[in-house]
Image (cartoon, rainbow, N blue to C red; front, top):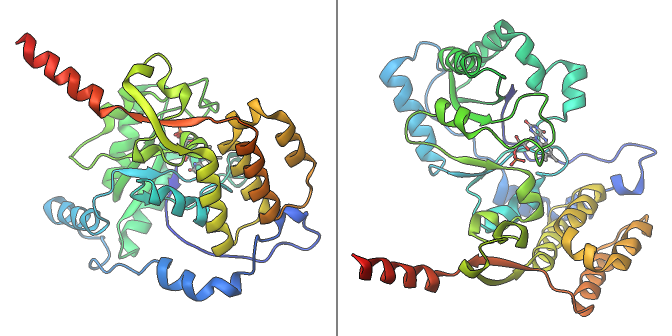
Length: 325
Ligand SMILES: Cc1cc2nc3c(=O)[nH]c(=O)nc-3n(C[C@H](O)[C@H](O)[C@H](O)COP(=O)(O)O)c2cc1C
């Protein structure tokens, strides 16, 4: 279980760091802009939730949700990957809320937190109770599911009783690590959800296609339904360029940039492997190198479009359906 939060901080790279650990530009240069546009304003939504229950608690939670703009599309927490420029990019393309990174599994296992707390539910209960009674903002949690539905439902009820206001359910068990191999279990998610405030979190798919929430789809997604889609006139090289510009403004370690570039351009690199080789060989990245890399991909004649639903086809179908009635 992860207790979720939003924060935007910068830290100096450790001594003896690999060059990929250095920040992509000088944070001081952008501090003013960073603070003015992005720092979270502390929300004031009343006193700690200790004695709140029933209707008043529900109203407080609803109030908070409304203040957040009732978000439905979330960038999931991703250690080393949901950093500020990536969150900003996703926000431009339809994400309405974003988690900052929380923690990687192996660190969680060693430190006994995250999903590893599922072995000690009384401890989870006391943590959530303590937070809910001490903080003046609602507590949100993110959980994985148990193999048995009834165990998950008991877990959810316990969290709710302990004071959790907003719950994100990752519909896989703790051992189902490979998202491509194990699909999220939507039946559990359906069984857990209550009230009308459902949202959806995305992690891996956004890494490949940060424009997902704006309706853009990769070729793999539309496969089999090509006739319903058209070229969206946006592709992953455009998204990489936008992301790099954000990284120039909001510095992050180069290793994060390298990883995003690989993931967003994965399909392009398959068609232009030499360009990928050159990226592999470049031990020290610069923006100039990366912009040039994008230009080379574009000049190579390769293009991997993102697609959008063909609304004219949808309208035509509607007409056909009407004419059958
Ligand atoms: C690169 C990466 C890093 C992640 N880091 C975190 C993390 O720090 N904390 C966390 O609670 N979940 C983390 N996750 C899990 C995601 O938040 C999400 O629950 C999971 O990937 C399922 O969503 P998906 O099927 O859309 O990928 C991470 C996932 C990825 C792909």
